[in-house]
Length: 432
Image (tube, one colour):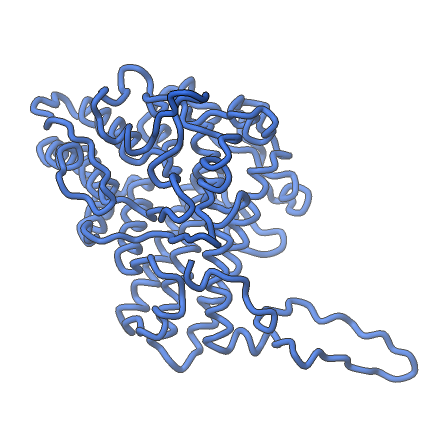
C-alpha cells in the first residue's frame, strides 16, 4: 500500500523526557538523530508520518480496527462462525452472553486501538492548524478526522457509553452522544477543506484510495442515521457521489487483514452459510447475486462457504462505504419519515441497480407492493444486511430495527478491565 510503511525512526514523538540522574553535575544526553516532539508536531512531514500511521493501525493485521470491527460484529450477529475452536477470543464471541467479559482480548485490543487512533488524530488535527501551508493542513485535518470519526463511531456501536475525550480519569457519555461527536469532527473537517481545498502535495503524501470529500459526507450520513436524525442523514447522503470509490487499499506487503487472517488460512472464521446470518424469513433469495459476491463455495473441503467479496485476496481494497449503503440510507430516511413512495423507490434502486463501482449487484426484481411502513422498514433492514455483509454495521442495525435479542449473541459489550482498573469513571457493564 502506497506510503503505508513504518514511520521512519527519525520521525516519531517523544512523549516523555526521562529525568536525568545528578552525579555531582547535571548532564543532558540528547540523541542528535532523534526528532523532538516539537519538531515532529510542527512540521508537515512529521504530521504526515503520524497521519499515515493512523491508517496503518486502523487497517493492517489481526489487531487492526478493521479486522476486529468486521469479525466481532460478524460473530455476534451470526454472519460468521469459528472454524478452529483454538481461536479463543472468536469462540467467546460466537458463544456470547457471559462468555464475553472484560478480559476479552479482541475487545480490549479494539477498545485500545480505537482510542489510540483518536489520540493520534487529535495530535494531527490540532497541530496542522498552525502550519503555514493551509491547503496541506486542510488535507491533514480532513484525513485524520476520517479516522477519528470512524474510531469514535466504532466505540459508540459496541459500548453503551464512550469516553468523552482522551486523558486521565476521563468521564463517559452516552453512545448516542458519541455519534454526535463523530459528526462534529466531520463537520470541522468539512469546514477546513471548504476554506482551503486540499493540495496535490498532500494527496501525493498519503496512501491512495480515500476520496476525502465523499467519505466525509458518507460517514455523516451514516452517523446521522444511527442518531435517528433522518432529514440530516438524507441531506448528507444526497451529497455523496455514488459513482466514485473510497477505499482502504492493500498490496503484497500490506495485506488485506480479512484475507491475511481468515481467508488465506481457513483457520479462524468463515461465513455461516447462504443466509448471510439472516433468519429464514429474511434470507436472501436463492438467486441473489450478492450471496455469490460475498461468499464462494468449496465443494471438497469444509467449511463449504468461504469469504469472498472484500476479503478474497491479499490486495483486495476494502470500501469505507458502499454506494448501496448511501442509497439504503436514503430509503430508510424517507421510510422513517413515513414517505413510503420514495422509500420504496430508493430500496428498488439498490436491488435492481445495473451499475455499481464495486460490482455489488442483487439482480432482483423491483418490489411492486410494499404495503405498510413497517413492511418497508423490514425490507430495508433485510437488504442492508445483504448489501453490507461483513461491513461491521449489522449489530447497530439489529438494535435500530428492533430485532429480537435472540438473533444476536450480545447487545452491548463489557468494558475492558484495563480501562476499569485505570479509570474510576468506567460505567457498569451492561447485562447483555
